Image (cartoon, rainbow, N blue to C red; front, side):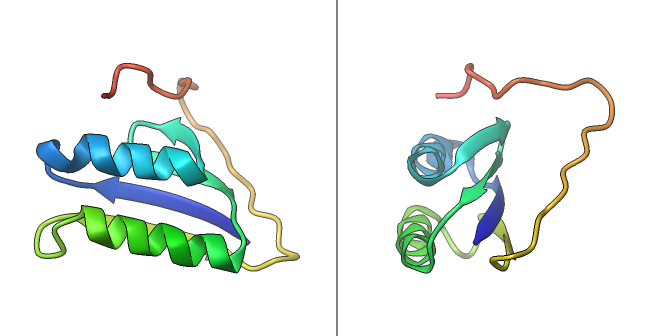
Length: 87
């Protein structure tokens, strides 16, 4: 399935969640990732993210698109490459 992940975490947890997301998905913008994952990979990814965040403070949004559907991404404004300045 195709997955889009957007996160907003405390500064001290940003590097860990960033590394976790990079292990599974493509870095699109600062805290946005996307890519195709199997159901088993989604399950492992979810477990890793839940271990890394503070559920009472951090927010992670995951949008999933079932197999057979094709998500369409539009870019409005200046197109930006994946950031390289984040730890």
